[in-house]
Amino acid sequence: MKKILVTLMVLFVLVGCSKKEEVVEQTHNCRNDVKESFVPYQINVVHTGDDIASYEMLIDIKAETPEEIKAILDNPSSATYLADYASIPFTVKELSDTNVELSYILTEADNGALIQTLFKAEPTATDFKASTLMESIQTSGVTCRLAIN
Image (cartoon, rainbow, N blue to C red; front, side, top):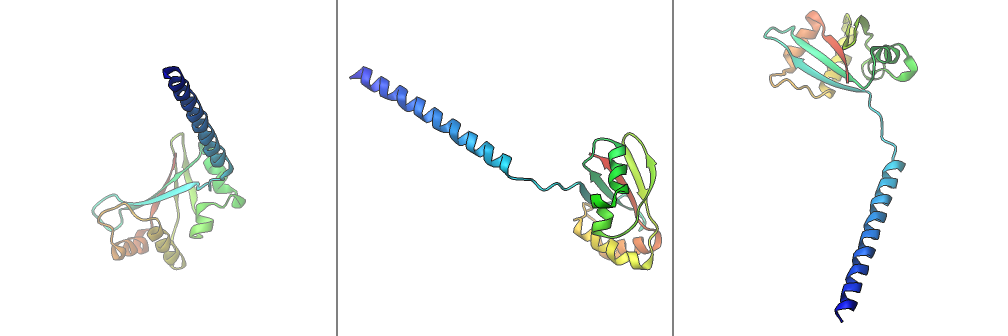
């Protein structure tokens, strides 16, 4: 009787283990079938000082090298962030191993699009205020840093 119980327990364990492997395998296969959407940019607005002109828009880009960043920025078909999101032209100021610094000059037409972009970005600054940011944008613009992720 004990041998039958032990045999049944061993079979139960073996069957249970093989079923678990199948479930894991199926889950793994399901994940392989799902195509994740690739979002190459993440934007945060950070208040970097006490005056009204001290906001920076930080853009983290998923790229391996500065060359890849430049290629994304230079290629209109790659749907660069500004072309799709705010239609504000950036100029590459500096290309180094760690970051690309971009800048732009705002016109009156740009202000609305940029403010909309900044609010969609869900700013990280705790003291972020719409009126202060709007005044800052209208007087000095925003510095944008593109960091290699």
